[in-house]
Length: 247
Ligand code: PEP
Image 1 (cartoon, rainbow, N blue to C red):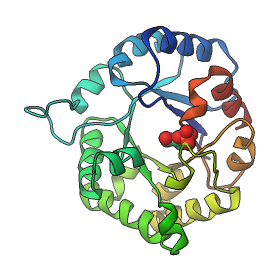
Image 2: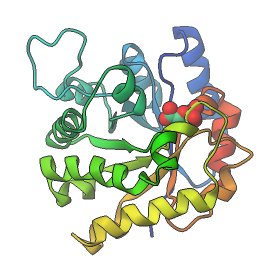
Image 3: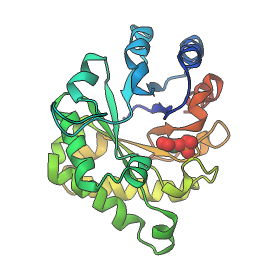
Image 4: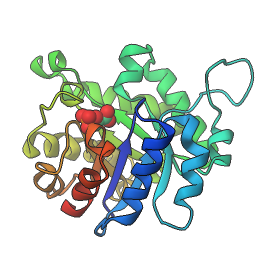
């Protein structure tokens, strides 16, 4: 039986004052039975890690460098994220792939660095609208998973989370139907099951893309949707908690 994970990706939003208030709001509210994680901008990780101590709410980073240390201006090492108290690190978010040119191979190297440092990568995969219209959705998500499999092997997925995020649904208000999302999630699990049935059965596969309190229950009721990676709706404590309660 897989637990439901609701993870908030705050992206580059907020201020010290607003993120502190957001954490206070999440801590004070009813989160139902879901596991929660928040991924704040990196400059706030230490502060928020302290605020989350003993709450059971996990801390995540929005990315992790593929190198151990050295001359990589602007990047953050996995060992540093570990020191900051991160359990998770998002890798391969579509904004990193499309705006910053992160390739499947680079994402896979970041995934591997997280694994080596005992940080659970949240591997984001998903197709563009054009790729969906050309019926390439499964090819694309399989290619993105194959890169991580090549770098880290199937065993790494025992300590990883996958987030299926159709690019056309991120931040657009256009959500995949529960049936569309379920079909892709089932295909992802099937692919992993061909390599290791136990790992495929236990890996949490989150849906991301305009999930909100109004659509969360239908998405989360699908058998292969094990939670959500939430962007916009994670910036309001009440909405984030309502999604958790919908699980
Ligand atoms: C995301 O960026 O991971 C995301 C799912 O964003 P939104 O919920 O705003 O679509």
